[in-house]
Image (cartoon, rainbow, N blue to C red; front, side):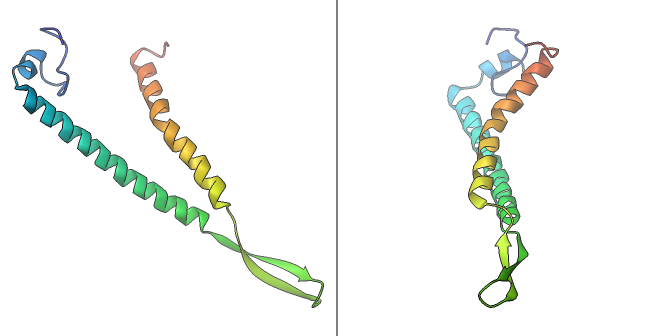
Length: 114
């Protein structure tokens, strides 16, 4: 960071000079606390996401078919979604989401020019 820059490295609201005067251990501690808080947020969102996936993939419907051996119509419950395919698809989307969002934010700050 250069003197008189736009904002600090850890706390962008403060000028660089204010943040540069703090001891390195204090800035490191603030960085680690912020990183821990971010990981906690990702953990909560991931748990909520997986609960939603389990709820969606556990849906069932009744299917009727003709049993030629007994000559009657039989009913059984079948899953609507293939759990493996649903989980893999959503995992791929979830792992790409941070990169997609970062690109969208970068495009927004640059006037939608690459």
